[in-house]
Length: 340
Ligand SMILES: [Zn+2]
Image (cartoon, rainbow, N blue to C red; front, side):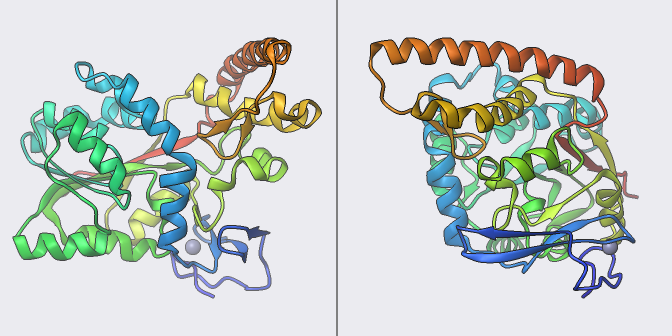
């Protein structure tokens, strides 16, 4: 078998891990490339229906309702994900200087938080996503017009027909979902203007608690496995990948985020103590969504005390972690080097 990034030979009998997915009802094997350090699950096969179900129904429904309630239409920066904030803090000045007013395309734009912010910064914004209901929220909340419920394939065709070229194409937490990462970037290239930039983020394989949570609390981190995530990047492998596809990128660590770290620590705590308390504690099905069993008055008070206690504990633990593991944040941010 050939490495999906550098093409080096990988021995098919030497896999690192096996994962059975109840979503696709398939077995996956994890391979590591000794040459470029990338890791990927095989078979690399995309199921649009599973993908849509997982993100639209299982994880996002409650999250969307919450979002509509708390979205801040004045301070658009506050609606962004931590990784997008980190990205903009590092690179917005360069983008405004080099392509201010240019066209931005966000692949996997969701509800369009990033696009709404970029439009206010003076860019002309476009977004695509497979989740139509998220796009609907984006149109309603931010009055975004150029949102398309299309795959990248469909949109590239559309853009080429319309003669659309982009000065910045972003994909935050998208690349790790792809089953053909080289093909993905090659499609992006087709609609990128000759001096355009790419940018975005992927999960950091070497994040604090990363392999620990993956192995010990697999049921809580299913989103990090195939058929959702296929590619696991380290900083080195991400740099090498963009070199291999001809768009060299600068890769930086995101800022250490205490609150998202706290969520991970809570996952670990609940996975061990949750079983003892049955339906009293939240049942984390995935990384966003939690559901509570119904309880009487006394039970509810007991639950509040437990949640408060674990909340405080995990918060202080995450502060400790952020002090001692600052080089192991959850996300890698990339931005293409200036092209001439
Ligand atoms: Zn490789």
